Length: 286
Image 1 (cartoon, rainbow, N blue to C red):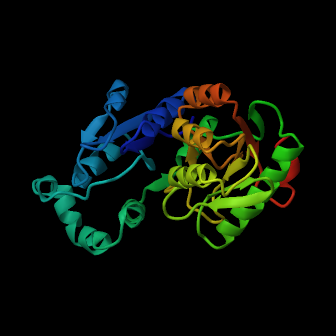
Image 2 (cartoon, rainbow, N blue to C red):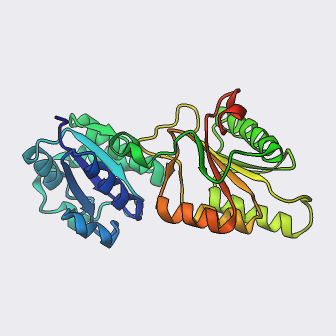
Image 3 (cartoon, rainbow, N blue to C red):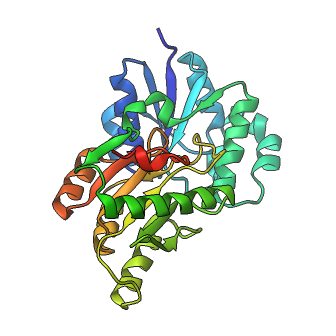
């Protein structure tokens, strides 16, 4: 029987889905909700609520529950407050290491440094995809039929673009229309990129109907920290941009709120395919 796993939940509905999916596998899940971050819906899973500064209390909980595997999922917008740290003896004991580790850096840097702190304590940080594999995209058509010739041409071109983006460690997504790349993702994220596509199309600078979005993980990307995800907002953005299909990397992109995501895709007539991001990928969407 698998050992218990602790899931530390930050902001967003995705954390709630991961907890539910992990429990569905039969594994015992210890749920920890970050105070002022976690979605209120996580309360249905009877979590322990802790502040970011309560590392001592968290360590005691994990020890008591015999958890060595830890998942961290959800957004992190706040740094530890002094009020959380004072009075938590376990945190106070670790304070010099915390200060050295957490000074400077953005939110992504903060999360990576927190992971390092856990690993230094002997815990194994695992990804949400490892405890809830059912949330990942599978290869082949997910919504709609396999791509037709025009969609396949756009899919091939967008895939070439995301492979190059990954090689350069720039972004995770690209859009192609009429076998021409019209947008690539940068630091702004997928939703903002789709908004640019909508504006470009509205200006008349892009001719022709349809088009395809491809989203994938970058080579060497630490999926424990940054698991690429699509959801209802992605479908809405693609619909507003006039796209006909979305290709997502099979086994490495998570579909959040799957029921609603697939419903919206059908409602907007947008096909959804799981693909392999490799030179032979064009054959893998069908």
